[in-house]
Length: 249
Image (cartoon, rainbow, N blue to C red):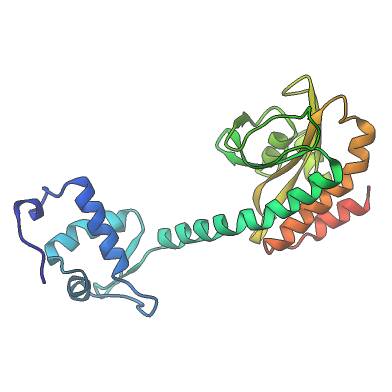
């Protein structure tokens, strides 16, 4: 049955929530077997008037959630694919990273964190706590500067920052920080990549400087890089360059 042609359905009078609900219904009109749909087919599947569909489709077109073909038919746009890829990656990320992080924490007895870049800051996405009672405390969701700490430097390096120390980080695939962000802590970080060598984030092994000394760093450096290689492979990217870096240690 067609929707009621009420006052709320007249041009310019659809409130935000109702418009969003209708936009979702229009997107859900498409099935996996549909390459494209005509305006009449969308109207038949949603029960909306064509005038309503045309108004809302304008916003979906601008947002690239829909595309209009030369023959006037509609198909799902590239922004929907991008959102789907993000959703798929978010489901897999924890399943891949957390086992790797737990293994590294078990070997080192120190805290392991995974940072992602968000503009000019980095966010702790996942964390596995140290087994020591005195530990380096960062919580999931904490936001830290890019310019301080090994994790931030690695994210900057593999996001295209120029000069030193970034050139060296890109060559070695790791960065060490002693008391830069916090005088009492130290850490070492390395990158994790996804398909197409997309930088997914930085894996950081960190703790109090009383335990994270040069001997500890030299011992755990191959273990950290091996963890990043394992994660990178699990995400579907070749890790040969990182393996070469490990072989040079």
